[in-house]
Image 1: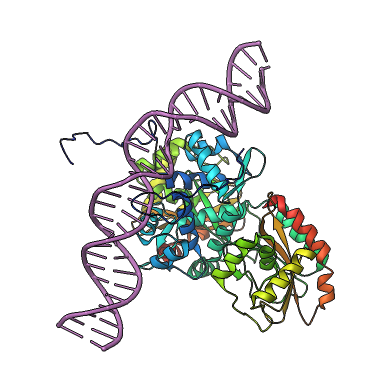
Image 2: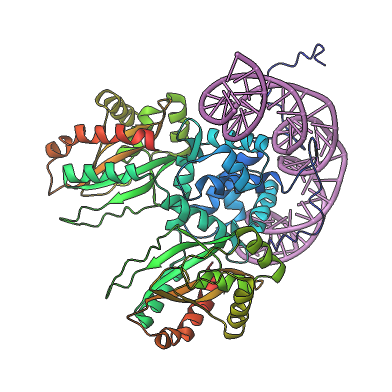
Length: 264
Length: 264
DNA sequence: GCATTTGTTCCACGTAACGGAACCGAGTAC
DNA sequence: GTACTCGGTTCCGTTACGTGGAACAAATGC
């Protein structure tokens, strides 16, 4: 019965006391992600912090996930991805839409350079796919499954530029602006100016800001609603490819980004 | 430390009417697996059937997962893995314990043949890892992320042999015994006899039962409680490697399986 | 020794999850 | 045309499941 329940808009806590955020499923997924996060098996407290879920709830959910085979106790006190999660991962990776590889392949063909596809994930971007340039293969630190900061990578800056300002600021507040190279943008001012440039150009440049001697150009991949979900990038060695040439890849890059949008 | 979640009491119905099975999380995970299952994007009804979750609940959970970016609507009516699930998959794959690759590498070294690692998943086994023999590379149909029947593969038969009889029978009831080659074991009698042999030997043989011209020898990988979670196998071309030689790989194979147990 | 950190168990509470049934809407057969 | 089928969506009364602070235990640090 809807009497005069005049309660003002309230998030309406749940369960025992005050709740912080999210439905049950959402919490479980965040915990799953925290377990699978790079850096070996993780301890309960770390997982709880990373997932922003109270220790108590984390423990319960983690135990449930372990019972399902989704996580396993690696160490006596640490949790790692379980067999069932590993199976799921293999199937997901195998089930990648064929178009993705084709688009990335064409971009590598067109530029002759190493190509990356990364997706936005919290305060970082995660490399999903990497096509090495076979002609002159150099080893970048980048590897599939690896996370990189948003503010030092071309793809990350594309994401930041495309997110609502409030959201982008929140992510930067949480992560800070640690410098990874002398060229990294470590002040809000500098970053803001660069993001403005990204927005007006439609692509981002990482000029040795993430790794010395490495330059990237990136473009965002948007979901149907226009939100950036990740991006594509072309990676070059500074002393082999002049910046002008790198920037000349922009059209092909943006084309690839647009082609990827309906596939992610 | 989380021990095994011992499912003792009845699931105890919930909500509106009679419920079939499982907690909220469990259902969501099964749905996630159904979405990621091989064979392109799936429709809601198929997902509901595969996950054994009522249509209504499937719809709700699917919508929630879509809202979280874990699934996306590929077609207007079909669901596929979303960007967040793809990110998770990449991280899980990348975070694979280093030992796994080493053990499999040693096995390939020792046998000179193609090596597979597969995990049990419902009525099938899923290939997680494949090390091609580079010396004489032949193309098997097998690929990472692919599912194969239990009763026609060496690894699958190892799993069947290691599971409690009731459970194995239930899986066979559900999947049947479809023949994939003339050599496939398609009767309960024949299969039972073979599984007995597997149990006594400690390894299984697939003698062109899954793919013509291809023979495999497999051994189960057990979890801490002694339950099979998957297995390793060595694959050979029939006309290149006599069966006796294949069987001679058994000791190295079993050693590898044992070494993998604590890593899965 | 005390202080700190981390993992685990308890438990009163209420909402968020449940799923059968009804409802569409598009095919398709007849 | 109507009737039937099948897939997707919405409703809604019921309640059991999840909730998280607090207290506890165990390991570590100083």
